[in-house]
Image 1: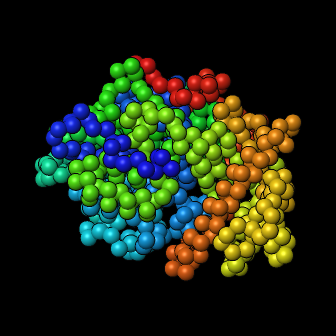
Image 2: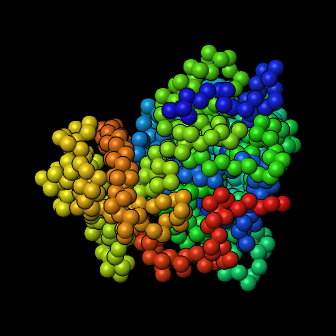
Image 3: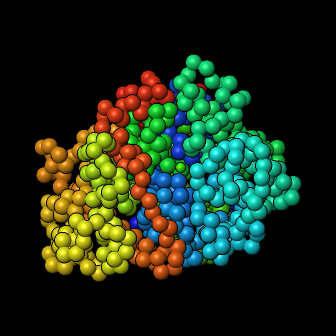
Length: 584
Ligand SMILES: [Ca+2]
């Protein structure tokens, strides 16, 4: 594809065509579970992010950027350039140890001369540190420095048992977001003092505003006591996160590094379906393949090379994805290498992460979308809610039990058919993991053939199924399919597979399903390999997962979940289709 052939020339020249190109310092700011519209620059009436708003005014925004729907697979995608389903991560939370064959972004940047640091939430299986061969420092995984925790959910004051610096456990007092800010400041100032000529890669990943809802008093007092307590807490958590990023940038300025810094901002996944969080009218939330779960704020601020956007903030609607940072940042980091060495490196990087595409053609000069317009993105493999996207079309696949059943009627201890139907395709050869009896044996075999999956690694035997037959087969396996036209219906309210459009759209849905099944085969192999190597974490299906899907479907239930921070935001989706950017 054209986008995959993009080379170093796609990275902006920064107005320096004669001298050697200097690699930038990279400050990668990742929020955790931030709502799509919960920033000042997205127009929130309640949430305040003054620092991010300042950056946003000079940044290039990716208005249709997608991320995996959970924390761990999202961080894996960022660090490896590969989707969770390529890595054997099919469980919802993705607690699988990465294989030795993956190349980490931190390793690539270290290799081209960067000093590398992670401050915040790592969220990989702790075994990764022992398992992965990279790195010689205390922490490894390609990072020279580490501070924070390895796990996921964490009390902001009691901290996670894995709280550590450079891999050594420590106990500290304080609010996590503020401790991360202080450490980022220390890392930058020390870097400026000790290694003034070396580029720095700092991945700043506070766990804010992920649950539990906790905020320091000073931040809380910035918001009126008349606000609902949950909204006030959430707003204070986001504000504190914003202050932390501001402290990092202030340190870069003090160290004389800011003018050569590339700053990227992104949320690791969509905001959860919680009353205090606003995804701006996008359907669903974290854990689902609906837009509320996968479409996240994302921008790149690099005034030296991308300009300051004299006509206001710039934007691209290219279908970027979390996996793309891998190639994109590697390209920017490698600008100083001799051409032959650069090409060799990028060849290896692209080979390791074939789905990671360079974003530079779209960030640098708003190139025509080209291949990006037809890009096929498998958003999640495995239920309760999988999805695949191509251009304006998105196919969502979920358990009917999640989508169509009153929550009161669901016994969540029982296997969900939709979920297990997906699992069958992964499990049929190995026979592990308690597959649902409905999809076992010959029934499953014939259903798989009807889907066009068949046996073996290739396509199915015999004639390819008709679109209608394939959709029927998927439904017979207990998977509910919904097709959305995101161009006309960004809120995913109107299923194109029901009503009068159904037959017209069957071919589109079937093609997307076919692409999804290809990814499923890749996932099958990756899971098998993870099992053989003892890296596969046990997965758990909890009530909460299904609830996320259900509430994204039932309008009367769902509306309750967008009533506070989304106040006055109803009907604004047309603005959000291109992100409403603060104008001053
Ligand atoms: Ca998250």
